[in-house]
Structures are given as structure tokens and as C-alpha cells.
Image (cartoon, rainbow over all chains, first blue to last red; front, side, top):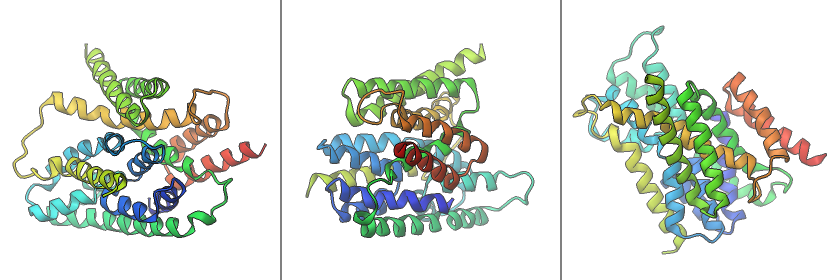
Length: 217
Length: 103
């Protein structure tokens, strides 16, 4: 997981400078927002001269899935002190979620008590945070030296592809992908800019819900 | 404060709120209503597709189905499906794209 984070972090560090926002913004995004694709989406909006509000909307749409992760982890964290849970929330990422939930719910390995679950979570989440921010700083430093021919921006869809593919486990999920991707493209064609992702997500969620209801008939 | 930093701070606050949403109330959480779970379940495929699909079929601001990013993306989809590995998918996807760009 960490290996995938490094090139992605380099992109997050190099892109803000390339788009005229400066290296400080890159580090601000990586420490304060700490969610790669949403950072790049916001940077894209700002780099195109879009407003801060549209950038925030794009970033928050991409991070909507954190709601699902939070809901999925919460039952396993009952009894953990609030301060630790709030720290854990700050470090929540796709990778930390995926690794933790699969270990916490593994039936072929010894079950963990709440303290061990939290320890396991931080054991995955903290290295990811450190790796992400070191890679961002490296990206800020080497950004200008990277060859123009290296299509680093393509790292974003690649990382999301690896998350998307295993999420397509049912026909309703296929409907969500087709409607979400299709609506995002149509909205972009219509000039929605950064809001296109939100439009896509809303349509995709609606299609998935309808798909599930139809499948249950 | 510049617009960039306003965007960073508000994105950070919004993202943290979503991360903490359920985790913060873990102690008082009862079972979520099935309707809420149903909506939450659709978020990953819908939100991820709304990023991935435009990046592949509309890379330069217009829909174009005959260009290297879609071809590289399809190869990478196959690799992601078979390996589930971020690093391998990244290297293959970017490698195929560079190869096609060089042709």
C-alpha cells in the first residue's frame, strides 16, 4: 500500500507548483486535507481559476466515501476513548480503512480486542501519513525537475481504479458506476467544471439505490 | 487569506467532519437504518467512477474515445482486476500511456 502512495504523493507535491499555487499549498493540502485525489481535484479547480467554494465542493464530493468508511469502522470502535477515535478519524484513508477492516473482521485469524484493533489501525494509518507527507515534500522539491513527458497526473485515475474495481461486486454497483461515470462526463460537457464530480456521484448513488430496490423485487 | 488557503482549510474541515461522522459517535451508535446503509453502500462505486471515467474518456476537455488515456486505462483496469495492486497498476498504466504517447 505504501508503495502506491509514494508516486501519488509526488504528484500531490509537484502539481500545485505546476499549476501556479506554490509548494506551501501542496504541503497545506497534504497535512490539512490529507486525501490525495480530493487534493488534486481542488488544485485542478483552483489552477483553472475556479472559486474556492467550487474547489471545496469538488474535494468534499470525492471524500464522501469517508462517510461510509466511518460508518463501517464505528461499531468496532465502541469503548475506545473519544480522543483516540477523533485522532483515528483524522488519519482515515482508503488504505487504512481497507487494511483495518479486513484484519478486524478476518475469520481465519485470532480476533482482536478494542485496544488491539486501534493499535492495528494506527500501525497502518501512521506510516501512510508519514509516507504521504514525505512524498509530498519530495514532490515539491523535485517537481520542476520531472520530465514533461512523464504523465504523472494519470496516477490519480490509476489509484482510484484499484479502489473502484473491487467495489464493483453486484449489478447495482455496475449501475452506480455507469450512471456515475456517465453523468460526470455529461456534466463536464455541459460546463459544470469541478461540480461535475458531485453531479456524477449523486446520479451514481441514485442509480445504485434504484438498482438494489429493483434487484430485491 | 488567499482563496487557495480558504479552499485548503474548508476542504480540511469538510473532510474531517465526514471522517469523524460515525466514528465520533461510536459509543452511542445503534444499528443504522437500512435506508441509510443502502445509500452509503453506493458511494464508493459512484464517487470513484465519477473521477475515473472522465479522466479516461474526456482527458482534454472533450469526449474522445480514440486516444491513449482510454487505451492505457483499459489495460490498467485489467491489471487492477487481476492484481488489486496499486503500485503495479500505476506502473503499467503510466508505462502504457507513455508508450502510446511516444508512438
